[in-house]
Amino acid sequence: MAEIFSLEYPQSLGVFDKYADAQKAVDYLSDNEFPVQNVLIVGTELKQVERVTGRLTWSRVLMAGAGSGLWLGLFVGIVVSAFSEGSSFFATVLGCAAIGVVFSVVFAALGYGATRGQRDFSSVQKVVATKYEVLVEHKFLAQGQELLAKLPGRDPFAV
Image 1 (cartoon, rainbow, N blue to C red):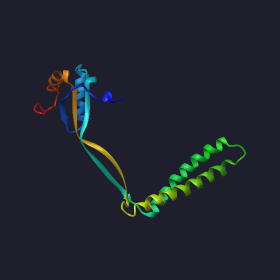
Image 2 (cartoon, rainbow, N blue to C red):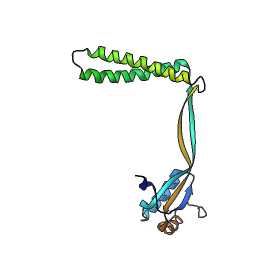
Image 3 (cartoon, helix red, strand yellow):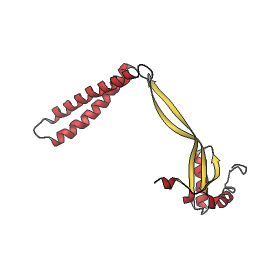
Image 4 (cartoon, one colour):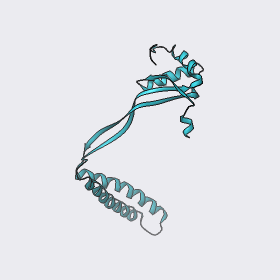
């Protein structure tokens, strides 16, 4: 699988500030019969972005734990009751939901307590590229450069 993300002697056709611009360049190459199966778009100059979504408190942590435990317990209860005979559907589902809430609240409390206040906020993270380089197999470099030189709106002095 790793071979699909590699080229033999890759050469740079250009560096773009936006992914849409790199995609436009490759689309232009494709429209002009360039063998685009020999092209890679590589995100470079990676940075991690973290968006803080809220403050964590004991009540928020315990409520989130209870909510996730409830959903998991309901799911397990429905599955268990589907394969068990003789027991009440509602009793099985409610029992599993209660057990799920208890275990999830305990584990959420242990996890939050282990941080000792060092991370009292919730967040989401992602890695983003700030540049996008279009690479091409070395034997197609001249053809790709010639075509991209004709790309409408392309800076003729760009790499």
